[in-house]
Every structure is written in structure tokens, then in C-alpha cells.
Length: 323
Image (cartoon, rainbow, N blue to C red; front, side):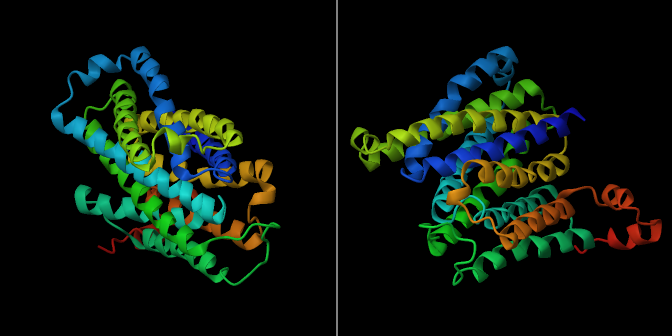
């Protein structure tokens, strides 16, 4: 139960983070945002690590655990986050959501390859529903319906970076689970976040240096600084709850609940960014469909069908493995 609550909290903070990032990238670059949001998480998690006894737990980690956490940090906080920021900048937070939801398919493919997980009929339906989201975005390319005044979506870059985001966010849960191992604890999970943030911060520092260092950072819009700082706090809390949830509950429970972040994304962007977002019925419907697809794909099929009132025979047929 606690793991599910933590996953829900993670989803809420991630949705709020997305809304503040949208305001930040209106006048600054994705790399500017990462230069603030990634290093800012380190002091917070250093404190959390001390409170949860993570330093003692990390001292007992095998080398492989360190490698997985470093890899998860680079894949999620550098590759995935940069893709998220660029897709958000190009398409807006809501229009980019259905594309980023493809991350769940990446997670499924990796779980199938490395953890031996299978797909049943309900899961297959979830895959089809998720794939409808990007199709809706593609159909909008020649439509001005629902576009705020002065906002012109860049579909090419938005689609590309949305897919990059999906790859990064889809791969990281498996890496975290492999890093935490079978005897994972809260102390290990908090330590994992810290290691991941430090690894990502090193990579971001290198990218900033190659982009011009201080000269590049001086081009950061002052108004964006506050939005990126707020985003740093929100995303750090989101990741804190996420790693803790993965330590207490199965991936199949945590990931579906975290998909609810897209609902919070709609709510918070409607509140903060209404003049900068595409929020017509078609886009909102596509986002909500992607949530349903994610639940069908990642939730416990038998428990879900039983909750919906299906009989034993129907549950047996719909739970049949496709591979």
C-alpha cells in the first residue's frame, strides 16, 4: 500500500514539474534547464541519504549496483530529461505527452528481454491504445485547431525528441530494479537516486563546457531561472518518491500508477500554461487513452479484470499469453 501511495505522490510532483518546465523553456534552452534542475537535486538527496542511512547501505553495494545506478542516472536524467525538455519546447507539454507515453512500450520490451515477462491479450490491447496517441499528434500536423495565439508546434523536432525521451524514461526503471537487486531497501533506493543524480550532473557539466561554459549560461533568461528552480524541487521530490516506491512495490504496480502523471500534467498546465498549450478535446482524449493503455499494459491483468467484474472464463481467455 505504501509503495502505491509513494508512486501516486511521484506522479503528482512529476506533473507539476512538467508544467514549470514548460514555462522555463519558453525563453531558454533545454540544456539551460538541465544545468539547473540536475545539480540542484544533489544537495537534497545528500540530506535524504543521511536521514535514511543510505551511506552505510551504499558501502555494501557490489560494483554492478554502482554501475546500474550510474547508468540509470545518465539514461533518465540526461537522455530522457533532455528529450522531455526539447519535446515540451517544440510541441508543448500536452501535445508531446502521447509520444512520451511510448516509454511504457520500451519498459515492456526490456522487461520481456531481461526479466522474462510475457504479454497477454489485455496487454496487447493496451499496446494498441498507446500507439493511437502518436497517431493523433501526427494527424494534427496540418491543423490549427486549438492552437494558442502565437504558438506554432515544431512537429519534426517534437516527435524526434519525444521518442528519445521515451527511450530514456522507458529504460531507467529496469536499470533501477537491477541496481537495487533482490534485497532492496529504502536506504538503497535513496542512495540510488543520489548516485544517479551525481552521474547525470557530471555529464551535464561536460555538455555545458562544450557549449561555451559560463558564456553559454549567461544567455539564460532570468525569468526562466525561477521556473527551472521550482522544477528542480518538484522533480527531485518526484524521483525521491519514485525510487522509494520501486523499493517497496513491484514495477508492475509502480509504473501504472506513475502513468497518472499525465493527468496531473493536464491539470497543472491548464492552470499555469493555458496560453501556451494545446488543450482541445482531441489531445486530452488521446492523453487519457494513453493512460488507459498503460494501465492495461502494466497492471496485474487478473486483478484488473476481477475489479472490472469479468467472470472466471473471460479472465482466463483474456489472460492468455500471446508470447
